[in-house]
Structure formats: structure tokens, C-alpha cells
Image 1: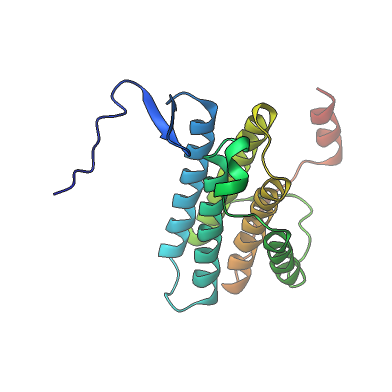
Image 2: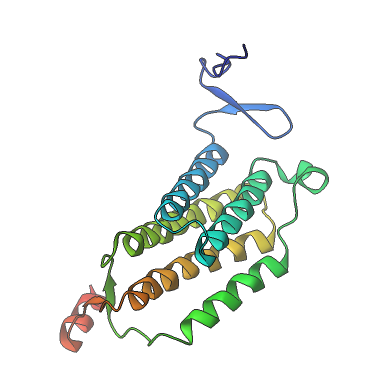
Length: 193
């Protein structure tokens, strides 16, 4: 029987692509961890959806694309071109089309939206903030070792997608979004500090 544990990480190192050992505190590992957490959040969202729905299938495709992103991040730039799956402009365009389609059916929010309404909507917001955290990590990693431009665009659009999907979820259930607005004077005061 093959064992799940290898004991190779007991000294605080782990492997990245190309069988390179790095510290578990290496920023590449932190970035991969944030992408993995995002993938889990998407999986939680999928678990709340009917098996045969279009959204279920769409989110599964996003998870598969996210695995391609992680494959790129796991490799240093000098190894990436030969081994990592390409993050294409078409992948970015597909998300933009989905966002534009859903946005055409919703109104533009004039205030901040309070996450909630349905469990799925709240977890789609969770996926959004997980995406933004992963995006910040990717930009930090990019400063150390360049990442593909389309990868960065894909993650940026993904956060926008989860925002609009969370809004659409409430619309589909006939629920009204909860907003939080600052009055003009309070907003000006808050931005001056």
C-alpha cells in the first residue's frame, strides 16, 4: 500500500515543479496555497448547486483553469515554457463574455454590497475575496520571478466574475441586495484621512 505521507517535508521544505526543494515559507508556496484555498472556495460553491446546472459546469471549468494557473506558478520562469499549460487570451475573453452577459441583466450598484442573501451568494463573495488575495500574492511573486501576462489577467477577471455571479444569484432568487452607503459628506471625510 502506498502511503499518503512521505516525510520529505518534516524538515520544513517542499517540492515545486522541476523537483526543486524550497522552504515551506517560500513566497511561491504561499502563492500556491492562496490559489489552492480559492479552488476550495469554488468547490464549496459547486457543492451548493444542482449537479446538472450550467453554473455547476462553468465553475468546474474555472477550477480546471485554476489548476493550469497553479501549474504555471509551481514552475520558475526558466522552466515554465516547456512544462506548463498555456493560459490563453481566449480564457480571459471567455470570462469577460460571461461577465458582460450577466452584467447586462443587472443594475449598476451605487453603494457597497453587503455579502449575504443566500449561502451561495455569500460563498461566491468569499471566492471573490480569495481571488483578490491570490492576485496580490501573484503580483508579489511576479516581482521576484515574472509570470505570464494572461495568467495575471485571468485572475483579475476571475474576481470580477465572482462578484457578478454573487449578484446574479440574488437576482435569480428575487432577493434584494443589502447596501451600505456613505453620505456625500461622510465619504469625502473618509477619503481625506
